[in-house]
Each structure stands twice: as C-alpha cells, then as structure tokens.
Length: 205
Image 1 (spheres, helix red, strand yellow):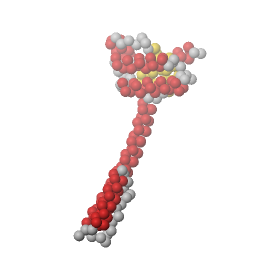
Image 2 (cartoon, helix red, strand yellow):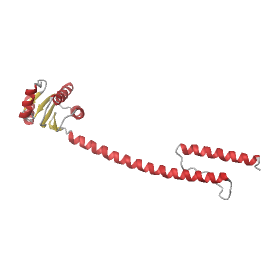
Image 3 (spheres, helix red, strand yellow):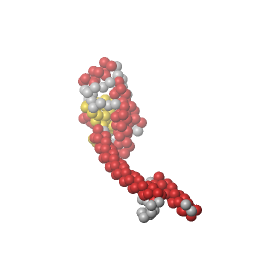
Image 4 (cartoon, helix red, strand yellow):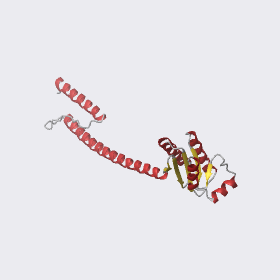
C-alpha cells in the first residue's frame, strides 16, 4: 500500500516534471529530470522517456538553428548580389563637375523606373549635381508608358533644382513618338550624350 509520504513524493516529482517541461516549452533544452536508474517505479521509467524526448527535441532544435543560420547566410549573399545587380543596372556616371548621366538599357517598367528615379535623385543630392542626362541609346522601343516614366523622372529632377535632358533617341523611336502623338515638350532632348554635355559646358562656361 502506498503511504502518504510516498504520494507526496510523487506529487513533488510530478510538479518538478511540469516545471521542467514548461522550461522546455520556452526553449531551454538543457534541462533534465532526475532519474533513479536503480528504481523500478513506473514514474522513473516515464521520466527517463521524457529525458530522451528532451534530448531528441534539443537535437532537432539545433539542426533547425543550423539550417536557419545557413539560410540566413544564403539570403545575405542573395541580397548582396541583388544590390550589386541593381547598382550595375542603374549606374550613375559623373561626366563633368555637376553633371550626372543615367544610361538606360533594356525594358523600363514601373518598378525599374521607380528604382532608377530614386537612385538618380539621391545621386543629385549627394553630389550636388546641377544637370542630369538620361541617355536612352540602349532602348529600342518607346511607348506611352515609357514616355510617362521619363517625364516623371525629369519632373522629379527639376524639383531638386537641377536641369534634365534626354539623349540618344534613335530614328525609329522618333518616328514612333510622332506617329503615336506622344508629347515630349516637357523634356529637353539632345541628339547624343556629347551634344548634351557640350550644351551644358557652353551654357555654363
């Protein structure tokens, strides 16, 4: 027959186990229950099983942490690569003191336009530039949306107190702009990057 003292001891052990499991629930897997290996009491076997589960959970948790650290490392590399690609896709070239050039190559969508505009405006502020040239020699096709992107760029540049010019319009784009009735009157245009730079140097010499 179980005595009151034995029942009280069992209650204390169970309470101890519950407190320990609570700690495990908060992430502390370094704890273990006291187990009397010489005892044949069912509680000792149960506690030994709990200890095995805690060790297994600790191993899984460590493996998960290692995987997370590895994933964070990969994400950091990807982010650095993305930043490098973005920097390469949006190069800001200082042609002259106070003169910046943004060469645009490829397709210009809303996301890329926003990124380019942000980079250009920041460069104007950082370098105290007075003239920004957007060179589109690398663009083969221009539609209404593309023209709108460039007009927004030009307006944003002028809001910072700098001048803005568009260069590199090829004959095909010029014909397309005229045929589509697109309005470029708000954008100063030059035939080439050299012409735009020569204009600026002549006007400010």
